[in-house]
Length: 423
Image 1 (cartoon, rainbow, N blue to C red):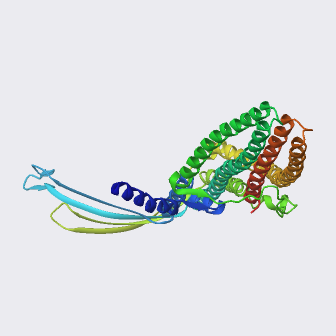
Image 2: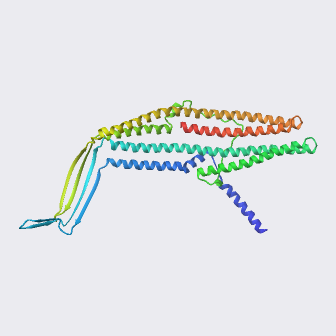
Image 3: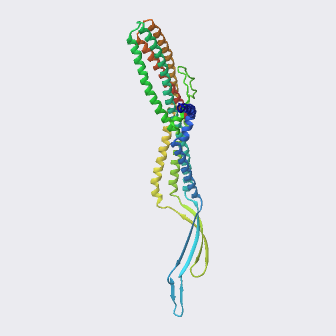
């Protein structure tokens, strides 16, 4: 007996701690956690770092090229052996030589500066791509969030339906015992209760799966999270304020900025191809030391080089034409996408209004279904309405509430989508 009391005491202490460990998160908190945890955002960060390293590497093209060399040898006999008759001369049995050279490019047809621009554009594009990833991750997190809310609210609606059916079951049981109602009415109520029980099993399983997806997406355990969102079923929310002009928002879209960056990249690639046909000019200096004849020698020199790619004057023309066509395609794609993005923003605007109107219709349906149920309940008690009509009225109310929940969740997602496309 003492052991049982200890177990009960331990459970009493553990259960509140378990409840405290499970925290409820708002939609905004879920989005922030998903952005912090999601692999696509981390991948985007790595791509930004890679692009930054490429830019730093490209910058070294502006700097002098320094190289050093050294050689030493030892032979088994002199490499230089002269017999002059009266005398002989031998040398170069061993020796050393070392030197350093510096080459500074002065002009390379703009290829160095344009390559550096290209690397900066790549870094900018990586930043824009990260912004796109963040917005998509935030939207997906909201979608998972509202799926959980949808399941929880549907269960709450089912609780209300069960409560009504339980009350009806008590009333009908009393009426059957008193001989006022047919037992078939009671069986129909019990069948409806069985339907609710089956629906509850499906909803609980759906809720579990939705929580698993949400937890994985934000990097938490399913047992550690819950969502915090209370929907006032039947209440019409205030319509989200929106700007009616969609064209003014297009150029703020990261997708548009990415296409703009693609035009700049294509233009820079064209300049690089043109630069390949231009001469290059460099200056340099060398300094060397050698000891081949048992004597130290130091020497230095400065020089200038000019290189003219003569054959590229006709060979490079094909690459220039190809790069020019790519630039034209990038510009046309930008213009075409600008129009499509404007349509996309307009659609997001209209979707917000449409989803709000769906909530409005669902709210009216709830009021009408509640009144219909009330009338059917009263008329059934006096015997002028059948049990079938009564149960259909109850099912209609439950369906109206579920439609409201779905419409409300869709409305919230439409708002997130509109914000992503306009802010």
